[in-house]
Length: 163
Image (cartoon, rainbow, N blue to C red; front, top):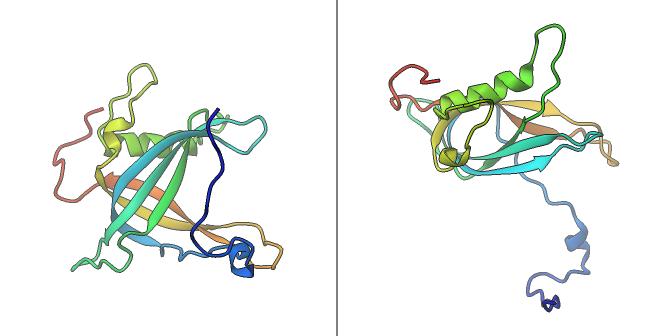
């Protein structure tokens, strides 16, 4: 068994500041050129838990002319459900969003399976929107950045969809 005794060299872990929830600036709505820096598997919080893929995007620039680097380095995370609920009305938003990501990254889908590893390191154009959570104990309504769409970076990949 490994030794799990650690020495923390940062702030006093018993200080009031150590108990304060960290805040981070929400990436404003808009279009950004971003790099896909990580993709992980996971499970949703719903019952029963459902499989999901979590994609981490790092903003490089906005999509303005000329581009601004004001949000450079900010991270946006997006969950993609891998077991989407098929609705009778034909409106399957989860499948549509996942398919858009795979298409933009030119990832082939064979027999409903795909390898997401080639997407890590790709530059893509993302559209960020906001959603709002339930009020916390302090009464504040949290704002979350969502990646609404993923497209090819302008000037790259010049052809049509290969899928």
